[in-house]
Image (cartoon, rainbow, N blue to C red; front, side, top):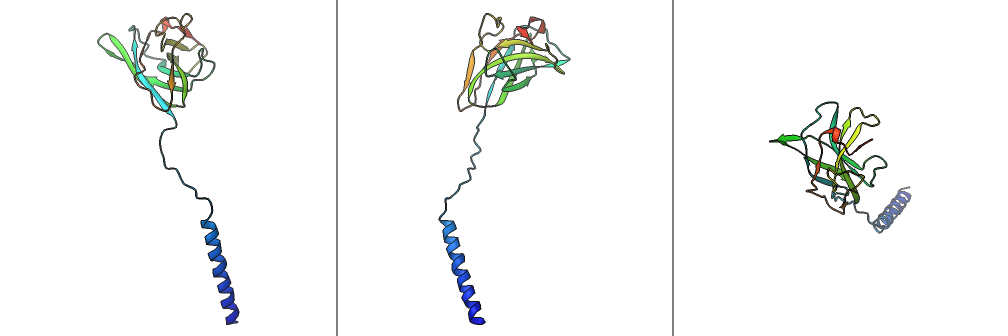
Length: 165
């Protein structure tokens, strides 16, 4: 009985050893601990060309769209808080979570809660305060890094909207 036990124990050790060797010869997998960005941001400053600010019922924002005219929801949005220094309102923004690609930026004031017709486009990158019907906004290109200093002019007064939807 003792002899049989030793045979089985010896066989078990050999099988376990072969199993360990086979397992160690398999493909190595590496966990990539790279926390580098796979999405990026666009940031800058909006300078408002007028001073009639809406103070209630909604919020100022900037959106990034993948097409112009926008045909759906934006790829990213950032709320803005216009600050008046002297006679000029400005607001900084940062739209994060953007993949590589082309984006059209539009500043707006949006009624809250949103209703159809409650989004007032007040400026666009490249057309600023010009009519969006006579000017196609410039796109910006996200290509593997964050974009900074994407600055443009906008109206702050919703009665001067370029378009609303």
